[in-house]
Image (cartoon, rainbow, N blue to C red; front, side):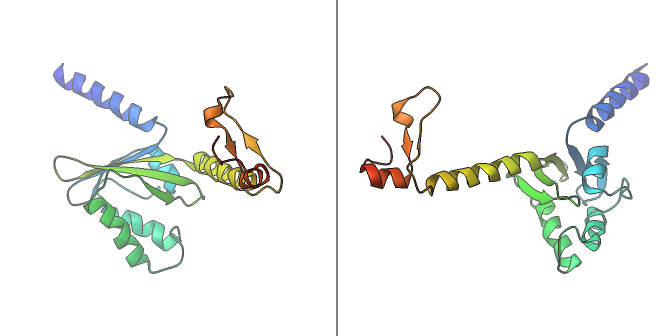
Length: 173
């Protein structure tokens, strides 16, 4: 009964990990792949990875394919492996082979391994880029542009530089 219960819990956990929106990879202290889900395989187009494979080999597959751009594949792999040897809580961005932008969050495990979660942030990056373009266009418009928050809160009123120079008003009213 206990074995069947453990097998059932394991099945549920694997189903949950395979159906999460992002990819996940777990490597042991020797940086060998211990677990990965299908979203990781799909995001990086690496169907040839296997449990127990050194992470270095999995990354080398991508480097040789040109996923990291021009350069020495060995050096590209070395730089990426360093992120696993000294994982940081800070997110790292990576470009997938299809041009999708992935955000990677790495966390060390108690036994010296690393769990990395991969999320596709392509749409978010596109929206950020568009906001920067709109901000630049508004700030550099030849005519004055005033924008106010939704509630019309005067404390949040902003003026672009053209309007400030025309009206001789401070840039924050």
